Image 1 (cartoon, rainbow over the protein chains, first blue to last red):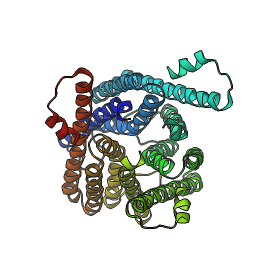
Image 2: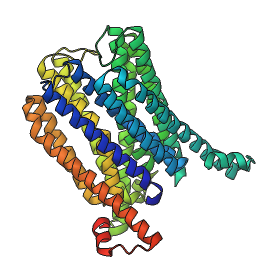
Image 3: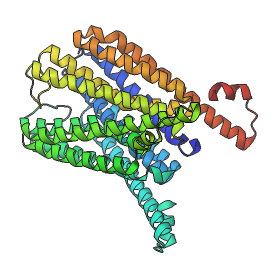
Image 4: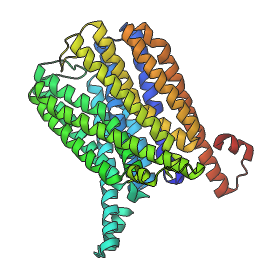
Length: 152
Length: 152
Length: 152
């Protein structure tokens, strides 16, 4: 059983490490620009780092959810590769946003695309699962090639 | 094994799609009211959309956690139906909050109730699991009807 | 199968209850200091409670992720005990932050340490899993004591 989730778990832990790195950057930025908690407003340089981290945190549970559903119902390896691409895009996003609001755009669009791919894989995997269940229960003769396409 | 989580996974992906919809609404509101990142302050119309999305994001991992625990330890179908009700309540919450701060209240209370039901189902399922483990290990003669009630 | 995750699920539900408690404290603080949604700025007493809850929410999905990976790949009981320590540290953090910005520091450092331990256990568990896979497939003769150390 653990074999079917080991890569997903490894990518998840890598994502946690990335979030820890972002959180540390906010702490450093708080010191550098003298913005003490609970304040969150400050010079634009600080606010960009703060918002970059907040945005990545907000998307983390969404990313983990579709990573695991895609990995369990479509294919683990494909989902894990998409996961690595997403984490790379988020790193680029953070570094770009730190420099300028415009610098966040390109990696943001890329990370959104990867997320949509993971959502698509999740839906394809689930569809394949429910179709194959139906064909098993009701002998509905779904073309086996279509099933193969979805189940890979 | 996948049969026992397929409905939970489907509701989770639906929740991710809802979060994607909310995130897009914030982007549109940023354009409409000219609030450029990293700013998060603006006219009340923008701030309500921004806070609605932030609140839904904050609750997303909590929702997914109890959805899965309730589905695995109580009953998948019941948890999935509660999950759909929660996502519907969150949609109503977002649309209500967009119009006025007061408009968020009724669906917020409803979504909180559904969340408490999922928490209750999770606890009942876990209690049933631990009780049945004990009775198996220690022959503690827990009334089987009580177990049935919890395990359904 | 459920035996291997029951303690993790129980700690997760306890974490959800803690988040519900924090969310209620923010609602009470909003009433006490007359800060109506969608506003998030107010007197420092309100802002500290608001930020304490926001910070705990932000870390919740990270905590749940490493709790489960550590529990599945290292050892469930150890991960569950770390999880309880983390939730206790977060409670102390919230109460400390409510009183003063300085009061949050000590429990914050403690909760970060527990999180790093869970990350370490996750990585050790995953490493042990991949090493034992390799030794099985490729007969690479990894010292069995080292494997035992990792797999416990």
